[in-house]
Length: 226
Length: 244
Image (cartoon, rainbow over all chains, first blue to last red; front, side, top):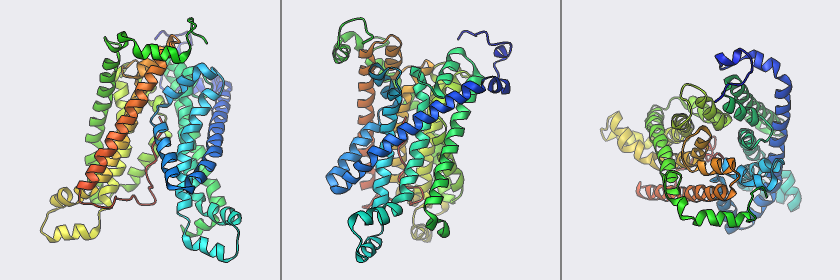
């Protein structure tokens, strides 16, 4: 834990320092860009794979059990293990972090898409069929909108968890908030660590609120009820 | 590949897994397993001792729902690794103590939520009947509410246990022992046989733990006089497992 030459403040090693933030604005913005990009990519890939998987899981009971069982096993592998395991394959490419995190968000999303579609009331489907709608229009016009709250709840959890897990990528030198946190551990630099931990929490809260706002815009019929 | 020898990674993993020396001494698999189990066990014991009584009592009083849910939500937004590293550069220093404190902090919410929900959701008619039989508040709690909440409490313990087992891997980042050491030490010297060997042991033990705890939970459910499983209210939903 050698002290590096970062000025007099280093020796008092405060838990928080405004001057750290003001002198590192450029680094903070760059780290935020990377953190957001990695999160968006992971969640987007997770969503793109989760939808067809969930639809597949709806076809048959055994498929559903298989999809959910496999995802449980996937979940028990710690992210540190998954990320370090992919390092010799992708090295510093973003996929080292994006692929495992996409897999974790996939698990949450599949679960919530299935739950959401299951909870669509039978009467709504009956009514849609009675109106003469075809299966595709029923899916996009009735099932999907009614499943939306559950899907978006899953999206919130997946996004917040992914923001947390991108931090682990810093261990193998991936950009984002994690890298300075591990650097701070190495240099015993408290202000650096606390700044980026706080930024991670802040980013998670902002993302959560954004999706919540989107949900309120997309499902106006639920607002009247609550 | 980066390793000096011209051995493919699967061969390196096989070699590491089948080398007798990796199964003895302070860096061997049995010792690392014992360290991992000690970390997870101590943390779980402390967290359960704090969370279960508190959850059960709050559920009995039907108070503090907001605090319990906020705690669960907040813990999801806070990065475990960040807390672990903050603790390690703080007064606790490098080693086992920051790891145990971080594991305890993150094991509390699932157990607290489930104990609280399980007891709170016990049917009012059942409480009424228990009181009608002349039970005092303590007896209602211990003889009616807790037994009925047991399946849900067990689910919370399983969730926290699996999570703690996986998160204990991170303890190696702050100089503690456990299976995480294979990943951290292997990565430091680019020994991928050791890294993947470690990953295999972590994943295998985690899955075993999940299956073992799930079967205990199933047994409890069958023997707690409840034929149907207790369902969580829709607002809480099935507690989603947290990736670590």
